Figure 1 (cartoon, helix red, strand yellow):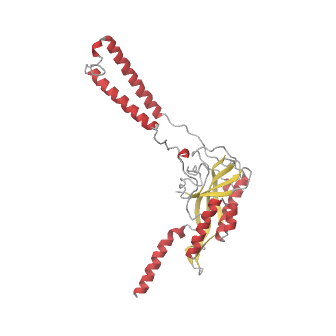
Figure 2 (cartoon, one colour):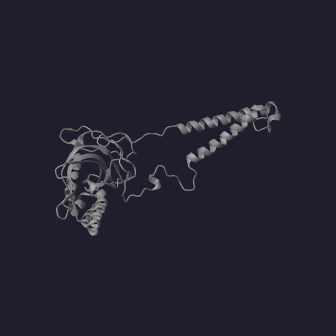
Figure 3 (cartoon, one colour):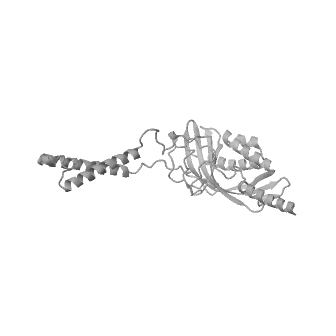
Length: 313
């Protein structure tokens, strides 16, 4: 009796341990991974298809260096904010002390210049005016808004009734691209086909096909995830993939490569089975829905490859 209870408890614990991994077993495993060039650590602009911000990369080979981080400051160097704070405090202190001395009749510096008469009074007024001018200029410079740049690229002039990827919706925001890139209807068709082809190769556990459609980085992540499935004695299949809507978030060129980040909402049959064929996650008759941002890369004028998948929050 005790042995049976122990086995049941162990099975329950194992099910709970596997649950997070099985809940998002499709290609990418419901995580954010890959690289987007210099945009890797910047959130893609939101779109109509993906109106909420994308999750930051959980796995990437692209380092988040201080050179690409706008918030980073040089080591051992005072940042503008700290310098402004120091100068503002100094000016405020001098101004406060000077005003107090002036109104109490001891001069701007407590009597040091008060006995000089008219010349001293003029000098005090000049110093006071200079201090006020400095503080006002400092406040204005700190309140000046930053220049906004980099509108999100949008698909234009396409018939949304034939291909849901053609529905426009890219919004302004995000870091500026190195160079603008125009995405054509043929590109959108290629993205939709790759969505279906990647999920098909994933379901067949065809790592060779996955390597042919992805960057080496993404191929390595897919390989690890498939190996983990085999280790657990499981197999996930994604079938009947249908793109419900899609739009362009960003498109740019840098360092001889072209990038396009596309928001895609798609439905599918997502089922995970064990070695006996028993369904352990999903339902073969109920469609699941997912919204993800896929980034594609190609050499200039070359063929697209999947370089990143990001989840929405």
